[in-house]
Length: 152
View: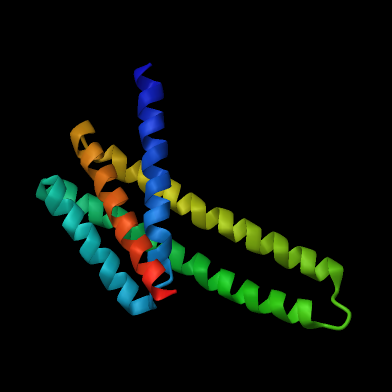
C-alpha cells in the first residue's frame, strides 16, 4: 500500500514537473537557463534543504537541463529536415517516415529526462519536502499558464 502511494506521488510530481517545465523550455536559451536556476534555488530555500542536499538537488537539475539541451537541438534539426522533406515535390514517404520516427523518439527521450529528474529529485527529499515540492510545482505551473495565456 505504501509503495503504491509512493509511486502515485512520484507520478503526480513528474506530471506536474513536466507541465511546469515545458513552458519554460520555450523561453530564450540564455534567459531560460538563468530562470530555471533561480527557480530551483527558490525551491531549495522553500524546502529548507541542507547545504549538501541543496548542492545535490541543484546538480540534478543541471544534469538534466544539459541533457535536454542536446535533445532539443536534435529536435530542432529534425524539424528542419522534416520541413524540407515535406516540401519536396513529391515528398519521399520513406524519408518522411524516418524523420517522423526520429522526432517521436527524441520527444520520448525529452519526456524521459523529466521523469528521471523527478525521480532523482524526489529521492533527495523527505515526504514533507516532497509535498511542498509538488505544491510549488503546481503553483509555478499556474503562473506559467497565466503568462502563456497573456502572451497569446
